Amino acid sequence: MPERRAYAVPRAGDAAQYAGRVARLAGTTTQHGPAAPAGASPRRVWTALAIVYVAWGSTYVAIRVMDRTLPPLLGAAVRFLAAGALMYGFLALRRGCAPRVRARELASLTLVAVLLLTGGNGIVTLAERHVPAGLAALLVASMPLWVLLLRALTGDRPRRATLAGLAIGIVGVGLLVLRGGQGQGVGAAQMLEVLVGALAWAAGSFLSSRLPLPADVAAGTAIEMLIGGIVLAGIGTLAGERWSGLWSGASVDSWLAIAYLALIGSIVAFTAYVWLLANAPISKISTYAYVNPAVAVVLGAGILGEAVTALMALGGAVIVVAVAVVIRSESRPPQPVPLPPVAAITLDGELC
Image 1: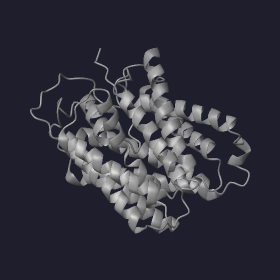
Image 2: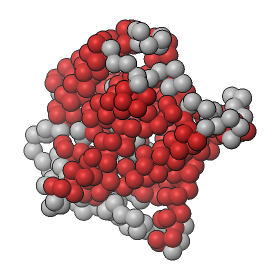
Image 3: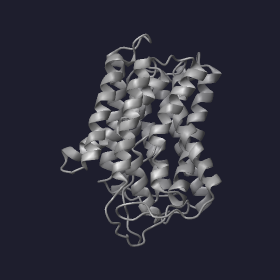
Image 4: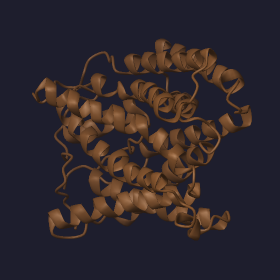
């Protein structure tokens, strides 16, 4: 029986943590750093990277469009239920049986789904009713810094350069929260709401490295999205959102945004990301953590006409630089120690 290891689902999340853990499942890295890529052509690698850059960067714009005429929590629920059902159904057809996970793994998936999808994505979706997509993306870009802070608080000893990156990032977050919304009608409380979502996502990513999650990453992700969608649907209903709001007064643009989020943001980008983990160095893959916010800002300005103020650009640049410092510091280990072979990431799972 292959060894089972934990993973964190990679939706606009902690690149260094997820990439390292899942790449180890695929056998493409050592204990302390990335192994050589599997020899894929540079064109294919950059095509997959472009998909991840644009797909995950554009999700903030799509969420903003969805929020225009749809109830945010129920809209997010439909997104994850649709994506999870499509992915799970595809896996079942490919394998000839329905993927299953162990009861202990299902409990872990439930906790991670509540933190990542309900807490992280759900809160950000609520906040984007008021916060521009680009500004929200810049705040969420700080998420790897909060994972680092949680690690430090639980006894980890990061390098000095990593801690310096954390300090720089906190300054950038402060600039955005206190001054970044000037002239856009966005108050500090609304940006703190986005930050709470980023903190929930950080907690989910942090705990996922310590929980018994399935080695079958594709099936685990599909089940996690289904759980997250169910919880979001329940909370949205309890919060007073009406299911009739999904069709009464809903615009075609908002429904197209949900379709885009489910198909492109969740399924296509995930597939490209998992392929990259087996075919490209982690240092290159991790660049999405600081490219996605830039994509969101550009698309927010170009598609939605969002303003980009000087203070917003400064605060965002500080956060992006901080994340780059952290990722670079964390991906430069002393001496790599090879791991024994473990289960590879594949669409053909072992449990049905």
